[in-house]
Image 1 (cartoon, helix red, strand yellow):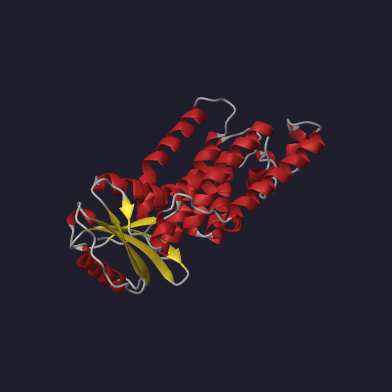
Image 2 (cartoon, one colour):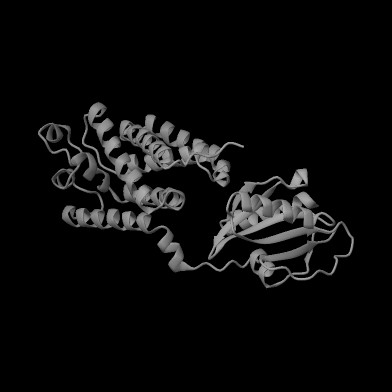
Length: 320
């Protein structure tokens, strides 16, 4: 029952409400972790305890919080094992909620009721603000595609329109038009091309933006666009367009974050990202009209620049 409640609570707080997962030295070996999310004056932390050990476990967490300079409001989920919950004096910055032997919660206050409610209120303004760069890049790509579609007189973009407005053309790059290594990432060949790329940008860009920040995400995207264009220039003679190289760079960034970033909640994504990457690379190499070297160049660029950012900013996960 305890494991079921913990699993359901983690699903709610991590998947639906964006909490992160960390470890601490709990007095209870199987409950040595906590969930947390930033709030106005620090963090809201959720720990788990069994009845009779909740005070000691709270003290252990508070010691962890002090050592790591984490100001926290603590919610302690206490498993009663069928015993009655004791009456306690309210402590500042602390709430307890109890779980009976059937897995039902009781003893809520306003804080625990809000934290554990499944009707999470989504602030749309904050959502847009948290993915501002991703949203801006999507709008820019769609506007450029719309412009080229108008110039082409249809949804399939005329190759001469693509060349005129910045496609990767090796001969023109050799002649000194190096900007095409970057501008080609904002052009698309047809409606499905831009549709799939914008879906991928939405799915991956907001993850990178959330964990790396707006400007770093923009730097990763831009650098990957150029490295994708560069490898395409070196190994693909055909005219090439599309945001895929930059998007593969975001995939590379997420791989690095899941392996080396401080936030352990990203670790669960590693296997899924590898599967997505393998499927896309396999699809690219089994199709004749996909710029595989542009994808690989973007992937390598995303990995390299993200490693550099984490190293420069001491963002590697601490051991322990």
